[in-house]
Image (cartoon, rainbow, N blue to C red; front, side, top):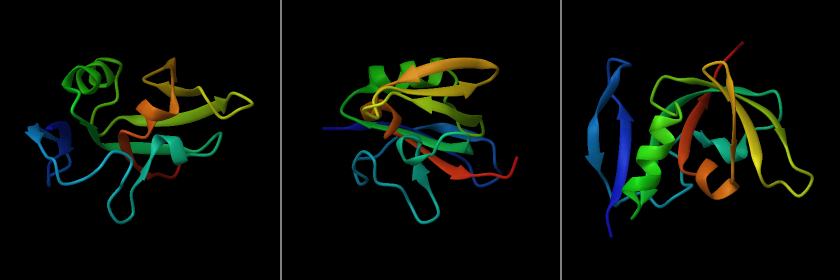
Length: 110
């Protein structure tokens, strides 16, 4: 299986699309977390989107605004922790935990 990843380049700008199968879904690099790990009112910056075996989901997340460099704030979560609601580019997006765990982020100060 392949995974579709949108990575941030070394200069901070989004890089080209790449395929990586070395990092399972939800596993972030050092200093990174996933959107599913954020607490309400936390703000983060998207580093990469990685969806193993499903390029359509990766493309959809990118279309919704989850691109490298985008600022995301977690607004709230449902009582059973699923779904989660985020603020991205001035609009609210509701995601399931499975999709939120595909977006790797780093925490930022407000």
